[in-house]
Amino acid sequence: MSIEDEIGIKFRDKKLLKRALSHSSVSRDSNERLEFLGDAVLELVVSKNLYQSYPYDEGVLTNKRAEFVCTGTLASAAHGIDLDRYILIDRDETLSESVLAGCFEALIGAIYLDRGMRMVENFIKKTILFANHEIEKNWKGMLQEYMVRNKGLYPEYKLIKETGPPHRREFEVEVWVGEEMWGSGSGRSIQSAEKEAAKMAVKKLP
Image (cartoon, rainbow, N blue to C red):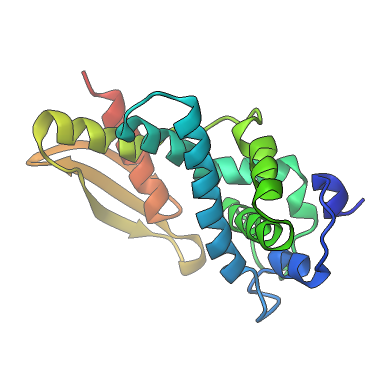
């Protein structure tokens, strides 16, 4: 079984596929540029399909798109095609959700270059749009939309504390709106801590 068998797509350019699977820890010719391209292709395909499928306003569509393209959803999609079995990565590196999500985006970029838009759109529909993933809510987007609409203010995230050694940092963040602190959260990255703080704040909304 190969990754081509897993996804049902045969690559014309095998070097392109290898590059999509190569983490920067093992090759200078890594998947980072393909990840950049795949991210743009993914957003376009998801945006197009949401626009065609839902009669919502821009704010709702933006939040729904963020749920489909977030790290958690992409990592889940990567697991769904057993992508972790094929990633070329140094043994000392952690195969984290962000690494899985980045490789999945690189694979999207490679499919687009090798087989074109129709093929990559079908792949995204099969693995993300119509797959049974537990979609992660866009807590930060939901909080911002509510606060701007109801208070005319943007949430501000403040880094309160960093703990732990460099390879296992823990971050604590608070989210403020005006003079009021609405929530706090912690995580292994500032971004994940901000999400937790926003989640707490959203759950306090009337």
